[in-house]
Image (cartoon, rainbow, N blue to C red; front, side):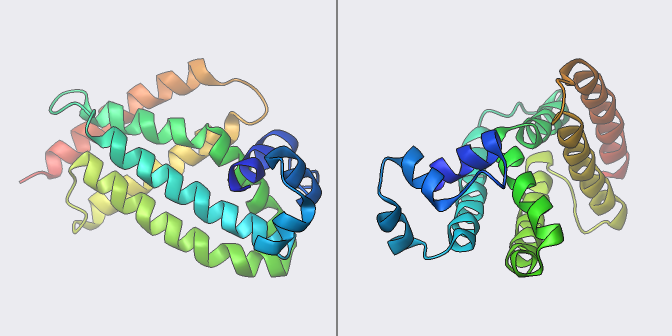
Length: 184
């Protein structure tokens, strides 16, 4: 059901993602869906947590394939940007947009977003092998996440992959040089 919720959000948007639509996509009855998730908000909140857990498990699994030495920073930045251009991000974006206008949904989403942000930052730091105790490094990693999110937003309405690829290469080079300068 949760994957069906993510797919519906990513493909059809917030308004079209109803309990009935999710139940149909999942091949279960609406009653069965509502047994587990009494409200649409419960279903979508659970889907957000599932999206995050899925993405973090994927990031941990992919970390072993990251190159050591030259190329690592670019590989990390590329993977971050890939996440923010994925269907999971598109689904989350639908929920964030709805939460911006719905105080009840905002109250549900805000604590999750804060948690997701902290863990995403920590994961990026770990994958980059950066020293997050340095305030400048902390801001550089956060800028990388913000850049990745912005590139994901730019990709929502049209394929921006060519320009995005060029930006990733340039930013990874700048980040790599900055982190190398900061290294002891």
